[in-house]
Image (tube, rainbow, N blue to C red; front, side, top):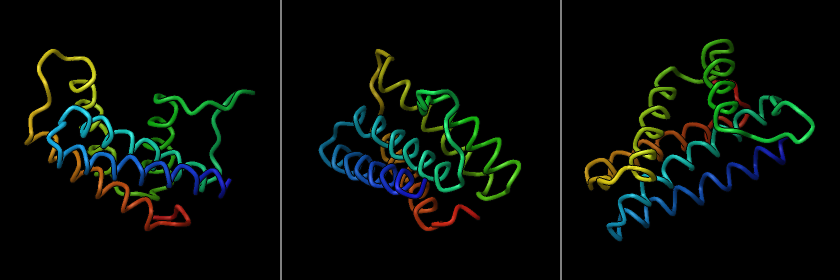
Length: 133
């Protein structure tokens, strides 16, 4: 599972770099979207390192499963990560939904906050190589 964790952490860092670049180029919707996916991939990395796999034969990391397992298992039960990470992801999910589906674009302020939160989130997950808070 360590290989999976490493692969998804690399994706998280790539998405974070993309979010930072998109923000710098004033593509605020893309910055918000990439910020969310940076955290989503970081969560998968944390789950894989903790030995948690997706259910079923196909082993798909769905958004609902990842968010549920990360919050329920790693934050609430195991206390491997602080509760504020749950709030960060929820905020980023809301901003991503605006970016992807609303008529009004994400503002520079919201995109800047999203990138800042994603950076803190990914840094926290990356710094915890064993998944033990």
